[in-house]
Length: 167
Image 1: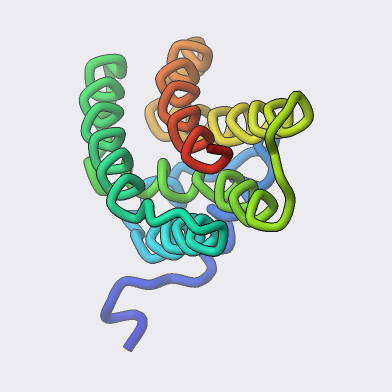
Image 2 (image 1 turned 90 degrees about the vertical axis):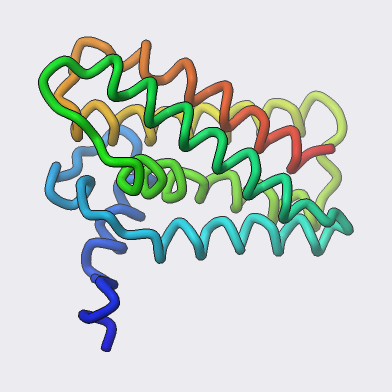
C-alpha cells in the first residue's frame, strides 16, 4: 500500500540524513524524488512543538511555507540555466530542511531561548537549514558555483521560521 502512495522509506531516510549532514553529499535521484510525506511530518512536528510552548501557529507555518515554496520554485527555475525543478520537488527539499527548525522548536518548548544564547542557537539552526537546502538545490540543478546565491533566500525563509520558534 505504501508503494501505491509513493512513500519510499529508503529515500526518506537518505534525504533526512542529507539534511542532518549538510557537508555530505546526496544523489540527485533521491533529491528529485517528489516525496511530501517527510516534509509533512516535519511541518507537523514543528507546529506541534510550538503548540507545546502555547503557540497556535499552524496557519503561519503553512502560509509561510507555501509562499516560500512558490518563491523558491520561481527563483530556482530562473537561476538554473540547464535544468528545471518541479514545484513538488522544491516543496520536498524545503520541507525536509525544516527538520533542524523542528528540533529548535522542541528545545524552545522546554527551555527559554530569550537572550544571546537563544539567538545564537537560533542562528545556528537557520544556517543549518539553509546550508542543507542550498546543498540539495545545487545538486539537483547542477549550480555548483552558485551555492551562496541559493543560500541567501533560504536564510531569509528559515529566519522567519526561527522567529516563530523563539518569539
